[in-house]
Length: 411
Image (tube, rainbow, N blue to C red):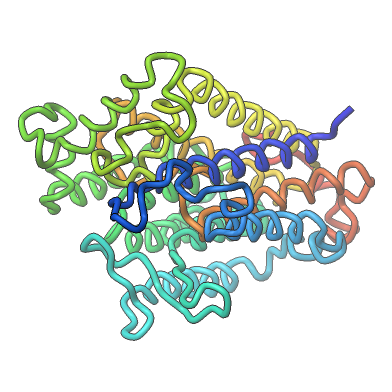
């Protein structure tokens, strides 16, 4: 009988393998023929070439990150997730400052990299890759979950008091989301939504969040209304054929790729939309390529793997008695689930176009590695449950009865 951690690993491995295959397929190009070098039907692809390419190396690094997290020493993990009520305000301030500083690196001359008129990446020298492109918002997305989970448990009863507990954490979450929103509205909404979910699960009062919800929605609306390209995405969602060669091009070509699959698909590597028709075919719109080449089987496989991964993560959260661990697991599962839903809605024209990747499938080294590391932590928690390590060095003896109680909505 497989344990939850093993099931989680198999799902992640399957998604990464599918990601490597489909990113490689979507990245195929037709080289012009010449007299001395005719067109090659195989495209120069082989299993060895695929796995030794950049995408294959990223997948290997992602699996390494997952393994490193899954086999962390139990004492170190329990010490890291131990709540410390006296350190609540200090750690919240320090953590927020570090995360905001990390996001501002995208504006630092020398390492900043701009793509598609957006500053979301930094580049650092790397021995194997030459230069390694990193997206700080990806690192912050996962780190914010850990910070909020730890602070929410450390705050204790203060979390139910607006000014003493909830307000400082909402301010921290708002600051981080606001900096992300300047360049990436979708990721900012994702971070904000999952952060609020963690706080509610930890015991924050619903009416506190409800009163402030209009302000948060107003900020998102302002981010839309003050950006021409974001507003164009909304109008193209309403009527993509109003500008089929411009703003509506993405979604029209995406729907064309899905329709071309015709149920059974054209076959792996035999899609047509990737040859200069569908933009961002290896990243945001990789699901359209899956639909075209693998048909309903590919679609069903992706949905099945995500469903199993999410339900397994929820079961891990239910079985863990450590409040910080439970909240972190909930945040990770919510992030992956919401991110996948947003991507699938965009690709199928059920939501306006947004640059949100499909977890573990869309091309992206930083996303693959950090998502895998987060899932590795869930596997570590499951291993602790199996070994009976729950609570070991996690809470002080005098606090054991109080902290062992279920947290908020997870009760």
